[in-house]
Length: 236
Ligand SMILES: CC(C)(COP(=O)(O)OP(=O)(O)OC[C@H]1O[C@@H](n2cnc3c(N)ncnc32)[C@H](O)[C@@H]1OP(=O)(O)O)[C@@H](O)C(=O)NCCC(=O)NCCS
Image (cartoon, rainbow, N blue to C red; front, side):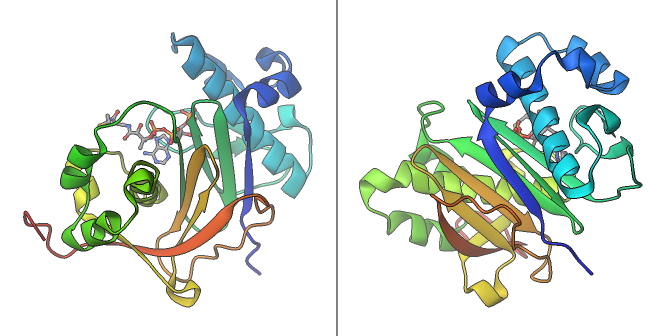
């Protein structure tokens, strides 16, 4: 039987404090990858994500954090390479600012989080490049003071769709994907909006389970459909 996805979300700082010295539990592949990361912020996010993934695996499948070894190929999702049990579940990781989230599931799921205060974006310009005509109608319907955070809904849904397939991101690709609000019965995506971040979870089809074993209680949740568009000609 398919298990619900396990979704964990937390602060980078709190994960680092709980994790202790990373050399005690990161596997060799991850330590080698970490050694190549020079940005202190990115190092913290990497360690926090890998710790959160282990917390999720330990809670779902047992063992201790050091028992689980994960791959660490750049620009690819992590997978379990060794652990107390054979585990082929998909792992999705995302971080933005001080927020980190992890999902573990039986179906391919993509996850993406964006902080609302991350940087001052030229949202009007980005919306022209990234949103389809139908998406822009919904976006322009938002009150002006909600357009910046509203735009991040589309951005995270599209990025999570790409990550569910192990694809990478570029603006032209984003425009070829369409995300629209949906009934729960038809949805293949969920969006959570907190005061300071937006988090998207996307499956490749409506059969992908979006129930999560550890929901985020303070967040509003919305249901969406995300799919590849047939035509992405300008203006459409
Ligand atoms: C993969 C990508 C979509 C991740 O987006 P991001 O907003 O930078 O980062 P997120 O925090 O949401 O996700 C990063 C995590 O996703 C996972 N990941 C990396 N590449 C992935 C992929 N292709 N598919 C699924 N998951 C991926 C990793 O676990 C990574 O964290 P880790 O390296 O600490 O383990 C993006 O970095 C990308 O496309 N990179 C390659 C091309 C590129 O750099 N383009 C420039 C942007 S225009």
